[in-house]
Length: 133
Image (cartoon, rainbow, N blue to C red):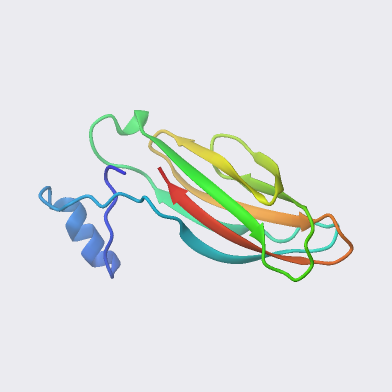
């Protein structure tokens, strides 16, 4: 993705961002966010899964960030579950296991958040992965 820089520290990433000769690393693989709790029949807490602090460069106001968020059950109990994702252009609701596309339009700073709830009487552990494309 244009204007994406990967480094070990924030200071190193900022110096790469100001160096116009630095290579841009495409984000073509999923980033494992971790496991999110999906309590039985009630919504779990909002968990941050992606942060965007604005974009740089020409036409920054017309920039579009697209994320594919995938979620699947890790628990022994296999059940479907509801997922809500907020922070993008619109609230995304889906039934998992599945994946969804989240779109962020413009030069904005935002945090994409996800929460889940199990359809069964048992809570679930949900594995969440994010890929920017």
